[in-house]
Image (tube, rainbow, N blue to C red; front, side, top):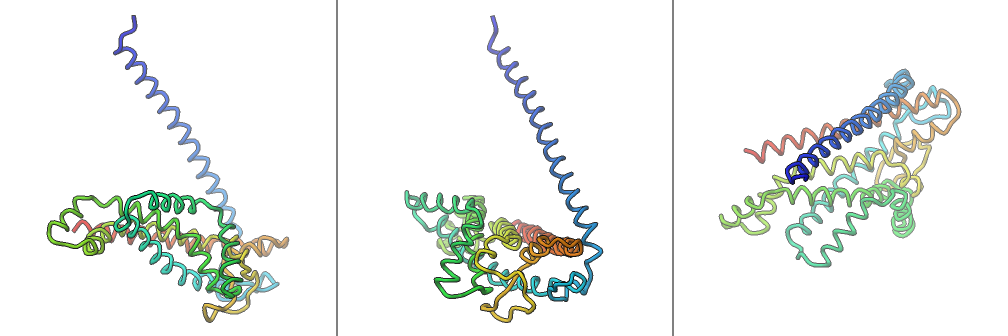
Length: 293
């Protein structure tokens, strides 16, 4: 007769075997993904490095590949991110603080949080159509930097709210109780105790969300961002283009020379994204050290 100890031993052996199988499967999947990424990066580097120079960074787009550059696209990218990043950060963090620290935990709050989480998974093209109706036509902003920035703010807001909520939830309750015991009010506890500890997670989520906004093309194409701009945006109401749209325009052309400068544009875009991710890591470590002091 099979004893309980023997059944548990068999169950443990089966779990160990299953874990080994899944580790092998996951390792193979990671290796395939990394190899695919390496092949793509090598292909981009082999085409784009030869076209990447100072003239490429400081020249306007042109119908001649040898004279084309990303000056206006680079300026447009920075222009709409300068508006998007602080606006999304302020609204997103304030919303997360309200939901976690001030709002009553009832059915309405749960419904609101569920909808915010669902909004984070909506395709970006839907936000583009919303921006077209609400900002371009409804608020008469036209195909401007401000319209693009507001559309991208809507796109990344759910991500920032959710990541900020998780960062705030990760703060130990004992820190809050210690603040209350010393006579701190709710607002003092939130802004002097909870936020400094949660800031590394909040900043990481914000910068990753902004990185997504920089790489998005569909929403900006939907609101009517231009594919050819030979001037710099001078104010929030100027027409603009961004790096992903400029790259898309070059990739769609059949000439091999445009494929090379498109690869050079991809390298610049990747460099900006890596810089933002590095900034997120540095800020996270900085605030983590501060919170531990």
